[in-house]
Length: 140
Image 1 (cartoon, rainbow, N blue to C red):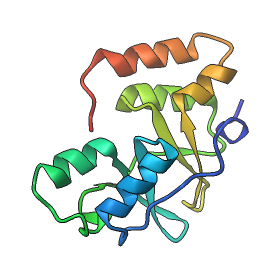
Image 2 (cartoon, rainbow, N blue to C red):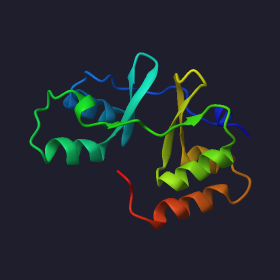
Image 3 (cartoon, rainbow, N blue to C red):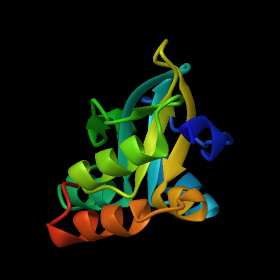
């Protein structure tokens, strides 16, 4: 099964120039702990609630600081035609629970979460990925 069959296509994104406060508000409204940052359709990075706390609040940055200053640039992603096993392996390797999904033109087309894989995985894909994600300290 391909990622394009299970990913969420309706992805809320932040723009690099959006303020930390506006992005945090949007994340709270949609109950998300992470959000892709896109300039147009191109993925520029990811921002997590942890990025906002560690890179913004702890440093005393203004709420008007552009999110591009605290996001994680060069975000990891998977392709829409990747197999779900490959995506689960990538999540385990990176110790993340969600990945942006891009097409081969590098345009953001969705996001896939470990829960999406869990709903469709017919083997031990999800359990193994979750175990590997949870075994070591998170990267972010």
